[in-house]
Length: 420
Image (cartoon, rainbow, N blue to C red; front, side, top):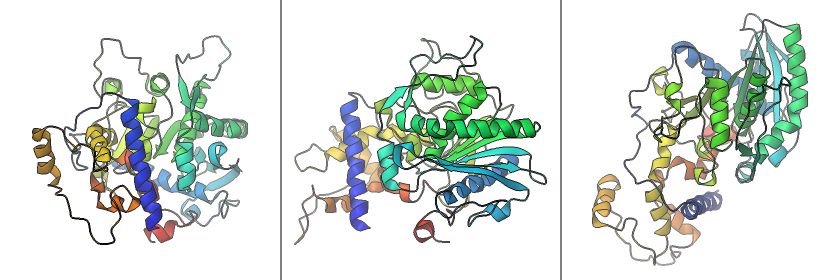
C-alpha cells in the first residue's frame, strides 16, 4: 500500500508539472480556502438535503451491478431494503475501461415518490479512473429533434471516454425509459450518477431534456465533461443561461449569476471537500465545470444541512473550484523536489507569506540509509495537506466515494478502507 500511495503522490506531481507546461500564466496564491468559509452561500433546504441523501444511497446500489448483482423485485447487498415500492426494471453492464457503463433502471412506486430512476455507476478501480480521465476530447453534436429548430452547440467537445460510455448504453436506456414513460405518464424521470457515472448521466440528461422528457439530474463527484462550448450549451439547456457577452466579466461567477434559486434546479452537481475528481480533467487541457454545483464543505461524515450550500455559476471560489486557485504554489512545490530547482517563491516577500501560512521548511541533513529527495521516498516529506484537491489522486480511495454515507457493501474493499 505504501508504494502504491507513493506512486500516486508522484503521479500528482506529474499532473502539476503538466499543468505548468500547458499554460504560461497561473493565478497567484491568494489564500488557502477554508472548508468552513462558505462566503455567505445559502444552505440547501432540509427537503433538498434529504432528497440528496436518498439519491446518494440509490446510486450506491448501482455498484452491485457487475458485482454481486441486483435482483428483482429489488434486492441487493446494499441499500435495496431501505426503499419501499421500488421495482427493478433492468440492469446493464457494457464493459471495462473507456467503454464502461454500468447501472440500473427502477420504478419508484407508492409509498415512495413516483419516479423512473436511472442510476449510473462510477468506477471502483483507481486504474480505470486515471486512464479514463486521460482520454482525448471529441466533437459533441446534440440530439437532433427533427424539426429543424434543434439546439446548436458551437465549438463543443466532450471527453471521448464519457461519450463512448453513453453511446454503448444509449439505445437500451432510451428504449426502456420511453416505454416506462408511456406506461406511467405521471412518473417523473430522475437520473443519478456517481463518479464517472455522473458524467454519463449528464450526457444522458442533456439528450432527455432535448427530447422534452424534463428529467432531474443529480450527480455526485462528476468530473469535467467538456470544453467551454459544451458547458455553455448544458447551462443553457438546464438553466436557460445564455452565452456571456464578450464584455462580460471573466470572474468566477460571471456565467452563473443568472441561475435562479426561486425554483428547483433540474441539474444538481454535488461536490464535496477534498474530492479531486470534479476538478479533473485539468482546466489547462481545455475542460471546464458547468453550473448547478451544490457543495458539501464538511469532510467527515455525516454532513449536516448547514454543510451543504448552493454555489454560484460554473466556478465558485467559495466552493470546490476554489481549490484550483493555488496552482502557482503547487507548481513551485513540484519544482522544489529537485535540489537544483529554485525555492517555491522567488521573492523574499512571497517566501515570508508562505512561512506565515504553512510555517518554515528548513533543510534537513541527509539521514543514514535515506533515499535521495528525487526518489519515491521523498513523497512522504512533502506537506501534502496543502496540495489542491485536483492533484490529490490518493483521495480517490476515500473522499471520492463517500458523500452522505459510507460506501456500500457492493464496492470491493470499501468496508476495509473506510470501516463499517
